[in-house]
Length: 203
Image (cartoon, rainbow, N blue to C red; front, side, top):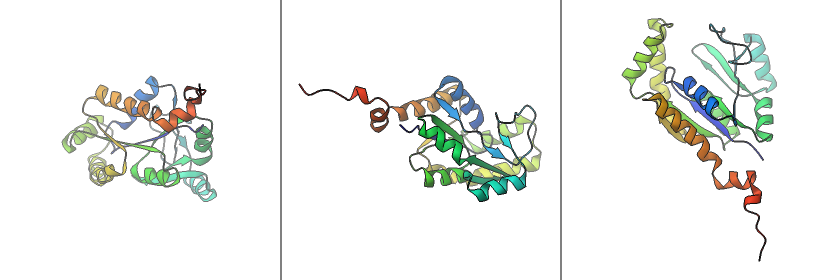
């Protein structure tokens, strides 16, 4: 009984991480895949909880061994998803969520085409810039780079199954929860997870 795989992607600053955290709090059946990264931990981030932090040499060695289902370079740092961990969780029937960029999403869907893609967008470019500047921890040069990257990332929205416009956080969270629940209600999933509901004797 394989689990459902959800991919959530978004431009930096769209609110993806906040939405994912909200989903995990509201739906205990979803487990977040913790990515590997070569970037340094930010204040408050914890090893094994937020990311698996690793050096560049080890990252490349793991990639060469085939340990990653997907990997990407984003803003000068490398990120990746553990293939053995993810495949084991899905085989156990666990629903798993990947919080990755569109490049990683492409790689995952080539390997696992049943994955459900969800793309999060801010309501406008101006609002995205306001949010990026409001965070207060990026330089003007970094913000301009993120805005330039966002313009390219939005072009890949049509590769996803669902698009959530994060104008109001609570509404966007409700939308994300609805997508996850709706996937579980699809007929093939229900037949696998609840065979007894379809098993009637002829009379």
